[in-house]
Image (cartoon, rainbow, N blue to C red; front, top):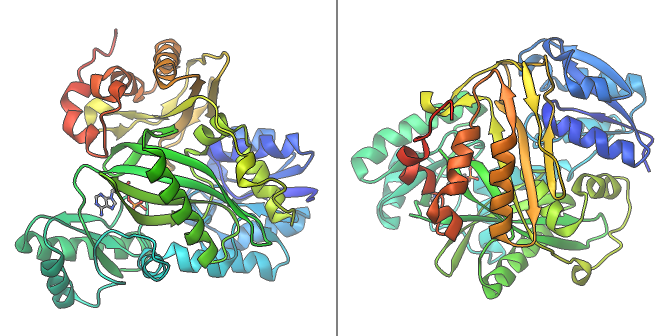
Amino acid sequence: MFHKILIANRGEIAVRIIRTCKYMGIETVAVYSDVDKDSLHVQLADEAVCIGGAKSSDSYLNMENIITAAISKGAEAIHPGFGFLSENSAFADLCLECNINFIGPNASVIKKMGNKSKARELMIQADVPVVPGSNGSVKNLEEAKKIALEIGFPILIKASAGGGGKGMRVAFNLNEFVSSFKTAKMEAKNAFGDDTMYLEKYILNPKHIEIQVLADKYGKTIHLGERDCSIQRRNQKVIEEAPSNIQNDLRNKMTQAAIKACEIVKYENAGTVEFLVSGDDFYFIEMNTRIQVEHPVTEMITGFDIVREQIKIASGEKLNYNQNDIKYTGHSIECRLNAENPKLNFKPGPGKITHLHIPTGPGIRFDSFIYIDYSVLPFYDSMIGKLIVKADTRKEAIRKMRAVLEELVVEDIPTNQNFLYMIMHDKDYVEGNFDTFFVERKIDSLLEYDEYE
Ligand code: ADP
């Protein structure tokens, strides 16, 4: 087992990883940008190294500085968390070259699965159902138009290098398609430095359901069940839960497809295979080759610490359990708490936390990095914490989340707390009638709350 791990991240996931390292008796090295010196992850780690300025490209994406920090502190492994360098194959390669363990799959797997159109091609070869669309990437507008007409509208134009909902555009007809193709391409170029595009049929009212997998270095792959992440705003997840309410037959097919997807690329470490579900059909959309924001709901119903499993796998341990050993209990829901103002079109609202009250109790977890007097910074993601509950049934989990949202106090910055509260009270949400279009369809009623209630 490793003695010391460097965490190449910030915010709640850095804190989350440091905590597990502590439980495992592993020393930790935090890295931070100069504006992050007061961050919780810096205070919790055994050692900390400043790696550059506020801009991510100067610090959390600065591979050389991070590797130098790891070498100088004698860290044997780097945990990349999510975002930043977590799906960067060049970084995984650089770690290998410098004799440092990258806690994740190897660079060639990241390359295969990180490029979304390539991953699509691989899945087609493996007989895993994908959304109808182009086989791989499309060469140019002419070819794209031809394929679009073949598939039929509406069409979703996607960037191969895409992530976080960027570089994605819908087109309902050929006219729209031409202009959307150009815009999406430009957006992709700006966001990812790569404007390779591919096409998918735009599935109306699907559910987003994903499978958590774990694979060791010796070819053993198991899954920890699924998560429903259909509650999204602009293709970005807001609320996730486990289990989902799909039939067992469909669940079995999806978990088998996810395992197959992993086996074909010789996947190792933790990963997530994402699908869209429409009726009885399911379609692969992408694989995330890293820990995900919503991993806690799976932890809550399986009793696993997924970060601990990641570290054990990276250190060369075998998975010493089988698929049949995985047991699921109860229902878990996660709400992403963001520093943003829903009534101002979800505008980010950084600022100082002057008052904070965090509810606790059985089956309640708050993964966060905020504390009183901490200033939420404008430079990074606006997610300030994740509220997670577990109860015996979904109904009880919803009641518990309502109670948590009622009690939570975060002042004096705007948050989406009331917006989350409204979703927890929406009749369709409560009855399980929701899909990825839920928020868009209901946005007006979800914003009908009084700020000072
Ligand atoms: P990203 O990596 O940018 O998050 P994904 O491919 O994971 O992009 O898709 C994010 C979300 O966008 C999905 O959960 C879903 O809501 C929506 N989406 C993606 N592909 C399609 C599709 N073909 N049809 C309908 N919605 C889609």
